[in-house]
Length: 362
Image (cartoon, rainbow, N blue to C red; front, side, top):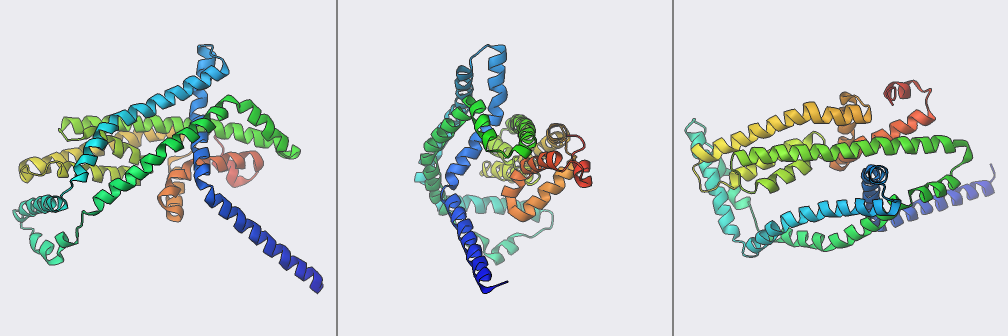
């Protein structure tokens, strides 16, 4: 190899590296647009069955079916917003006059009540609390800042909804046009395999996301019932937040349960700890545990095993590995990504022994 060839190789490598760096920089700068597009794609997967139903059963034309589907999505979003606006307004008014010293005092009172209860069972935690000086380390002045951040997010929500709706409309309306354009840029040798993979991916992901929505709705209703039975304040909000946390596999339900118990106890400050706060918190804990038992043994197997044709242990290992590599984000995207990879493997490497085992039911 001559020095000229080596120089060319170095220049080519540098240019390639620069090109990759530039591409990553551009992707970073337009990351919000990519997020909007991905959300629109997910909603399109959910909306396609609705469009098909309206066209098949109600004889809507394509444009009218798409508009009706978007109207359904907007109605759902608007309904949730209208449910939370009164709560947000009242909480913002409270936080604008927030007395952080009062919150610290209430929390200390709750801790003292817990300590009194434990002391009756020969467990002295008050000395440990004073020794650690925990109350001086707790600072609630961050709450108004959090509120300001939330308002900043909400201010950009309108732009996000409009962008997603615009993209979603054309993804649903001109699906056939996009498919033809996509076919033109595909290599002829692999066109059939790629198109078959896309159709299968759409099928499985549509079932997955539809199943997730159904699962979250069921969990939300059960959580809400549990909280209503035991008279927990802000039952709707707590149930909704805990249900959304179920999107995070395995860890989400645990976080939701702990959060529900804490919020239940915080909402009962001023009541007797032994006869009211502790029993209610324990009942909520038991109720949420029962809901998780129902979800783990009925809802999730239907979604993961039947919808995605994957064994529960297979899903658990993939989710766990993704969690270690990419954290919570990895756990959320693990199952859809794994499903896409399985479909691609089935189409392009059907004779591979490992692929055969993992995709035998696809």
